[in-house]
Image (cartoon, rainbow, N blue to C red; front, side):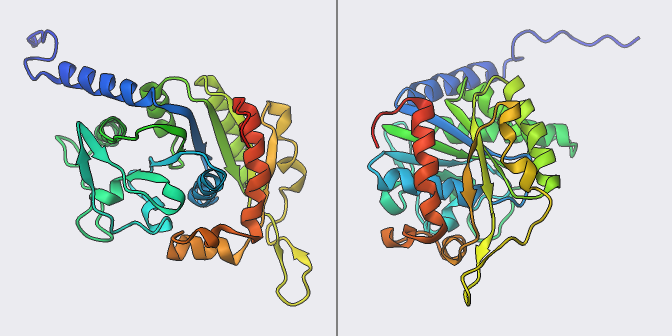
Length: 295
């Protein structure tokens, strides 16, 4: 049988020291962030990024210092939605200063490092297997958070992709989060997947703030009657409390939210009225959950 040479430590590559340094920097930066809130689902297409931006904008509008970490490394959308996709990054001391969008919200995303619109991330490595790509993504996430000079924040909202591995990476990097918000849409399939995600998040030790039901109905532009394009999820959507996940509220379809996604939230007035009003009530529940007395 072939004998392999035992490698002690990091084999002289200094990887262990580099990772330790990054984690130390990350820990120091996170001390200035009061609440770290993850927004996830486990199901794609439910509008997590739109919810994240709306939660952040509402909090900032009410006087809180807010940041958004776009943790969807392969499909980043936060810079476009915040109207800063062409922003230039600058260094500040020992880190990268995140650009700011409406209400002074600080944003960091891999999209800000792309040299051209639509350019995919090239995960080069010694193997094309997913296990290697997953390691590269975890490393990129660590560096993205550790190298960002967030400054003092009341809330850091973290927009996660529909991959539980990224949530696991996040909790390993940041330790215990202050809470997780789970987004669903009113369909039986979405709710079924979301329940599994809630149980997985709980097993990883993160407290569940509750569930937001997105795309719940819309008002007819002619008669004002409310319609629901989705069917089959109504009974379950409002009973997530049976697994310890309170129902935070519903967010209906709204053209202003569509405009936010397509054109970017660049003007404070763009966040008034319509479905965005729903986030006033949702954020009050978030504040109550974390024990924040300001409103």
